[in-house]
Length: 172
Image (cartoon, rainbow, N blue to C red):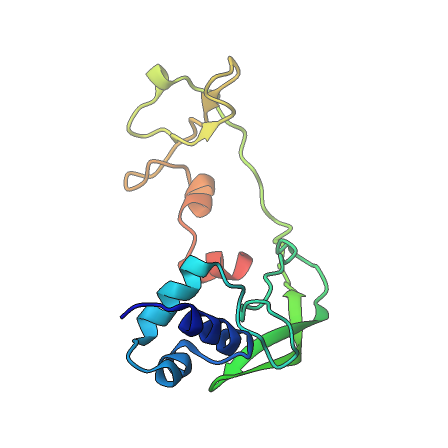
């Protein structure tokens, strides 16, 4: 199938009116939907016209949400989102929670043990291997407290290392 000047002009006109590639292919005849899409791409035509009359694409704008942090109050923000119903694009106002409220119960009875400040060569099977500090700095050391036979960490650091998955998801 050859793209004559008349067919290209008709394609441009139908595309600017907001018809889909399938509808344009049916009106032009003898051309597939994919051929229409390819020609639109090669012609660098803008996105199809929408119900509002703009030539923007049908994708909703992305907004960055604030990072989730503990104890923030929930904020509802309204933004305009476009969605398609058949071949029609609708714009609607949607309220979106940017930050969800999180309650974190802090246990006030946590006692952080003093580390024995052991170096790597001083560790044994019964010492805590929890690293403390930056490995590239001279102050780097390991906890070194007594650890149970079944764990490489003392009871305090084992609670940090092995959190239940449901609790980890809730804290995020």
